[in-house]
Image 1: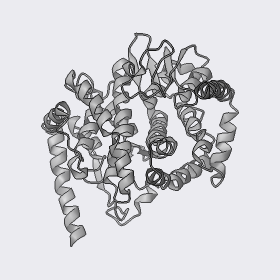
Image 2: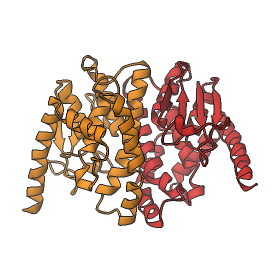
Image 3: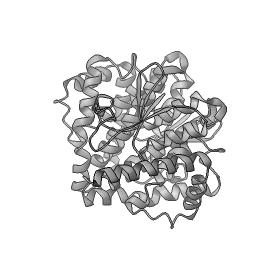
Length: 210
Length: 210
């Protein structure tokens, strides 16, 4: 499989899942500003919306949308137990994927990170922060992970929480969420993926400033 | 199963799926303004965010998030073929669920429908409309449904498109999307669910105005 990614973007979640499953994949870095691939091709040929992640499956077809990609990749490696295959636990992971994708990622973090969003649009996004973080705080108070074990949903959540400082979200009022974030970052697959993409992110910024 | 719903809210998608599968379910109407159940109980005990849909599974546990509920219900009735169980087709349905949930529902329609959203927040939401509708227009030009047949993703899309007039989204510039919406609304399960919930919606407004 090939993962189209940008450093520290939400595609990081899929890299974490590949690393956690000890699975091989090819990683193709996308210049999101210029919407260009390393070979100069227009990334919008791959995804008209110009967003990562996009996953190229082994049959050559393309799959978009983080929640779809995370379920797909998790299910490709059942021994890693990152995506339950059936039942209530599977439904629960999907519930958290839905929550993270809509309430956190799209509803709050994207407008706060988007330079084209007006202050009023950012304020509207931020108005939803407390209730969403309170929900997480309550849930993680009783649960080490979003479900019983580390899954693709935790890979997604840690990827989004990692943007907090970049958009002036202070997690301190949510001590349990902060502890969760600190703890999950220590997981070897997460540490490795974040460290590698942070280096790529710095290189990208240096090129942009050159 | 029990579906906590509000008339014409996004929970309509799950009702469409139950009807399309000719499956029995209980429907519990939520007063979203007062966050109350018919028996007077606080709906936030069911969902702290006060959102529908919530599905009570047969084991009594609760499942939130439209994309999780639609996959779950679709898989409960495999003979209805509303949610592919494996493979590329399954991944593709999930991709569209992700797109509708994040790009359309949360990214555009929710802010436009939200009386607490400022004009600037609505403007930011609306700035994403063309690119998202263009993507749908291109896809539906070559496809009668989002995948090969009617699935839970179409149930979700038609539910969201149904809000267009309420938030001054004119679908006319996207003729293929308009045709799709008109056609899918004629599907008996969709017509029945929309007709019933429109009547409940009118009753709710009458009570609010009384």
